[in-house]
Amino acid sequence: MAVRDVLRMGEPVLLQKAAAVETFDTPELHALIQDLEDTMKHMNGAGIAAPQIGVSQRVVIFGQKETDSSKNPRYPDADAVPYTVLINPVLTPIGTGMEDGWEGCLSVPGMRGVVPRYTRLHYAGFDQFGHAIDRLVSGFHARVVQHECDHLDGILYPMRISDLKDFGFSDVFFPNQDFQDD
Ligand code: NI
Image (cartoon, rainbow, N blue to C red; front, top):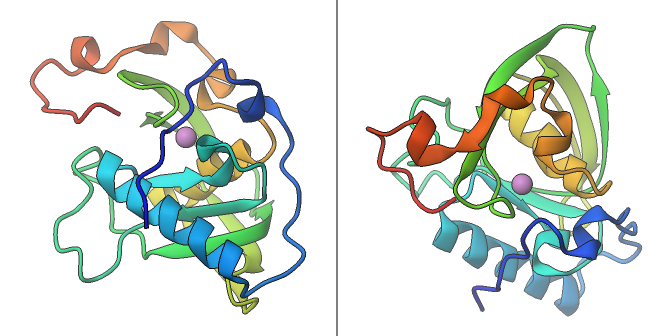
């Protein structure tokens, strides 16, 4: 359908709590999902949340379809995360274990930071047809879900960084890696 402009940090909508989706399997919802998918692919994102394209609804997508052979160039060492549409998500950490990891965000282009996230979590929600999703995940998959769902509560990853010395420009921290403009 369309690659949409990704809003950057500073836009008020990125700080809002997004509204729950109440009706599934509608043309409007399918169009939103398609725009999110087109935009995420175009930007080589690991995921994207609806508020990032100016739609304040509790919708995120992340991961890659099996047909997309290459791994995400922005996270080359990461395990593949299955393509997922997740609506009205509920996240429940399993235990208190957390781990640090580098993150970037399409709304904070050109930068990276080290963010602590729960290592394991359970997440539930719905796909665009209203089918229930229920998963237990860990590692990078768990990290991506936490990052994307934070967007629905107006939280951007820099707000989660525990030591701002671990926040800076991608090409300074990683001069030998060919990052896309994330
Ligand atoms: Ni993000």
